[in-house]
Length: 456
Image (cartoon, rainbow, N blue to C red; front, side):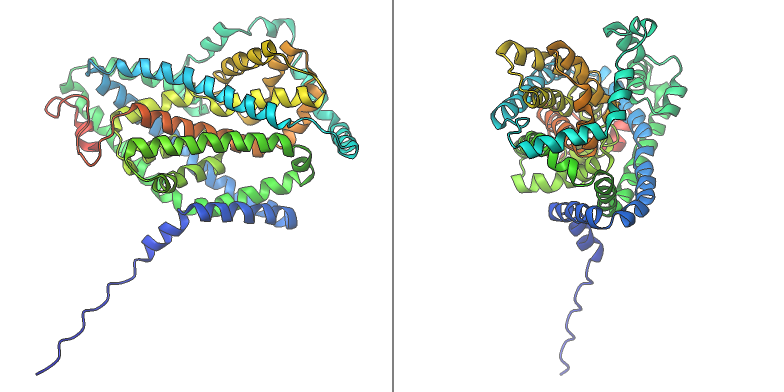
C-alpha cells in the first residue's frame, strides 16, 4: 500500500508580504529617519536623487484633476436626485465651525503653555540674530512683496478672492491645475447634469465611471514606490535646510508637531469609532494616505488617497465621500490655522510681546478666516499671509520670515498631515458607513444611474 503524497505547501505570497511591509507605519518612520540621516551626512547624494523623486511626484499629481472631475460630477448628480442630500450641507458648515474652533484652541494653548518663542540663552539669541542677518535678502524681497502699489491694493478683498475662484475658461483651469476653480465647475456641472433625463446622461455616466476606475488603478500602482520616494524627498529637503534652522526653530516645530499629532490621533479615533475597527487597524489603514501627504505636501494631491481610504478600505458610502472630501478639503484648513496661530504667538514671544485675551481672540478669528483662502496655495504663499495677522498686532514679521522659510518643508509637512487627517475624520463622521453592503444610500437601485451601480 503506497503512502499518500504530502499536500504541497501553498506558494509564498510575496506580493502580499511586500505590501504589508511597505504599508507598515514602522516602514514610514524608518524611511523618514533614514532620509534625515542621509540628508545630513550625504547631501550630495541626496541632491542627486532628488530629480527622480520629483518625477514621481508629477505622476502622483497627474491623476488628481481627472479623479476630482469624475468623482465630484457623479456625486453631485446622484445627490441632486436624492431629496435628503441637503442635510449634508448643514453638517459641513457645522464641521467647519467646530474644526476651526478646536484647531485654534489646541494650537493656541500649546503655543502659550510651551513658550516656544521664549529664548533665554544669550548664545542662542546671538545665533538667531546671525542667521536672520545672513538671510537679509529674503526679508528685503518680502518687504517689497508686502508693500503693493495702489493699483494692486484695489483688488484685495473678500469679493476679489471670490471672483478669482470663478474660472473664465474651464479648460485653462484644468491645464494650469487650478483645483478650486475646477471644483467649482464640477459642482455647477453636476447640479446641471442631475436635472438631465437619465436616458441622455447614462453614456456620460459610463465615461465618468471608466475615468474614476482608471485613476484608482493608477493610484494603486504608484503606491508601491511611496516609501522610497519619501526617503529621497526627506533626504533632499534635509540636505537643503541643514541642521541649524531646525535647532533655532526647534520650539516652533515642536508645537507644530504636537498639534499635528493631536489632530492625527483624534482623526484615527473618530475613524475607528465610525468604521468599527480597532484603533491600530485604523492607523494602518491611514498609512498610505499619510505617506502621500508627507511626500507631496499637498492636500489637493492627497484627495484620491483620502477617497480610496474611506471607500475602498473603510467601506463608507462612495457617493457621499466623493462629494464631501473635495468640499471639506477646501473648507477644513486645519494646517494653516495651526501655522497662523502658532507662528503669530511664536513671533510675539520671540520679541517679548505679551498678548492679551483680546489679542489671542483676534489671532484665532483672523487665523480661521485667512485659512479659508489658502486652498491650492504653496507653503511659502501660505506663510506670507501671516504678515496680515502680524500687521493687526503690530508685530515685526519681515525679519522672522527668514526663520519660517528655512523650515518651510517641515512646517508644510505638518500642515498637510493635519489637514488630510481632519478631512478624512470629518468625512467619516458625516458619511454613512456601508459595512459590507453593496449599495449606496442615495437613489434606489432601480433609479440610480449606471455609475452608482458600477461603483458598488
